[in-house]
Length: 188
Image (cartoon, rainbow, N blue to C red):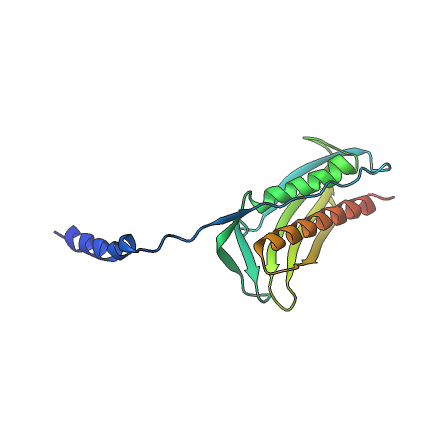
């Protein structure tokens, strides 16, 4: 008998949603294109283990927007085809291992840990795509580099396609900056 009121409440609340005549909003999916970099002739020779590539808990498949430094919103109808952390891994792998000549190793004295902190469309004060990356390079557990890289690219129009293009440019610049920081950290 106690379950009857719960069942009536569930039916009463769910019925209007089932009778709605409007279709659910269409969801659009976007990818990030990462242009190939030119191979460098004098890249650092050595083995590097890309140990952890993570994203902050709020960065998932939904596109993120911000109007201020404290407010974060999620798009209801725009999604990334892949998790943004996968785009980060691909950008860094391209910059370090394909372009700069590092050798990717499962075990090496040099290890790199990455965290994607922001992958956002910033609406104000300037309309930009922002990537924030935290990187830690260590040799045998001793930290050689602990860096926060922030890259912003202007978004040409208010479309999600232009945001996707701009975030790709920001991500590539962040990966290129990371490669330069690693090379500087290892200079004698």
